[in-house]
Length: 518
Image (cartoon, rainbow, N blue to C red; front, side, top):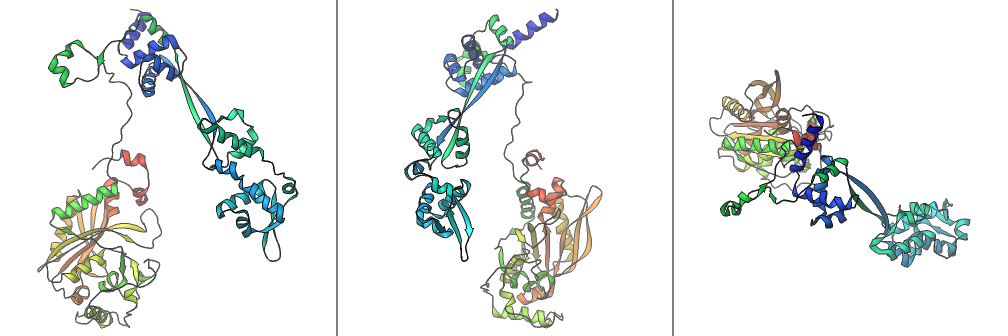
């Protein structure tokens, strides 16, 4: 069969696959070629315009119709237009005051013209723009003075006020833009609350040569179904119906369902890992005292970490509800080591410093409070919370981020147990290659850092160790305490293969939609 025969076969196959809606639209176009979609809807006996447009879109993709579009623009009155018709434009009312006085102090314009501050500001801007007044400085104040052009203005309404009145009278229907004076309308459109623009979109459908040829072949309406129902199966009526064919090669838009944000997803993974290991979650306030955030953790009061460059302090004082005896033991530990075997930091401990409020720089402030309240009860607890530091934001630092904090306190707890807890935790997150190396942290001794292997590189994940006696002894905690603090964003960056921490908080919808679910 020659090329002509192949084209005939292709068109017949195309006609055979037309939906009922497409057939209705084509048959309507036989009488109304080039008509608007609303007229075609009535002719095609379809209920909604969207049915016409859906069918027209598919017919256009098949080359049977073309869709034309025309946009008509109408000027309509805005919410403040009626007030302008009643009282006049703000600059006209202000001009009336200036015509009587000749000059006004800048702050007197609103009260003299009976205007609020916002309206007086609008009037001032338009007075200057229209050249009706000018601002100048006298010896003791700034004044607004009427100009010659302002004096020559009559009491009659201005052309833009007449246009506003016309739009108010026209109502929702409005006035076609082409019927308005273009210069006046251009200026008036800048008054967003006085006038608005309403657009009407008119779409027309026109048959192509392929569409006309299809109609000449004959297109019949037939009942067809796209989905079988239980009623059709029970009654046997399905035997009489024609099933609508589906084109598996037709374009279908990508559908993006909801999914958790990477940070939320990582939070839940970490939370689930700890709970499966038998830990209990604790929470606490963002605002803490310097006592719980620093002093209780044996951070010296003259330590650089307390400097405003790192810590975000708040105004006022913190109502510190702590046993005076506990505070005294912490004070003595700082000054001379108390009964811990330490020499302390020396110097004089400031009782004012402990009451300074701040945004917590770590969630260890919650951990030490929990230990102070439960000094004798073995525990396995963790927290997931935001912390705040005065950091310069770059690819690896944020001023606000999540910290993963945890402790184990029980008789016989050891460094080996801490290593086991950390290995188990990271393995539950999917990291198989883990190594431990010595580290230093201010309130743990001995201390260690955990690293994971990724793309042949060892990456540091966080610090851990055993709380020093200077931290635990003042609170009557005598069992060993295993502690760790990890950055959640670091875990998320590794999980999602990104090298800039800021990407986790950018509104990049394309990345959020296409990232793999883990």
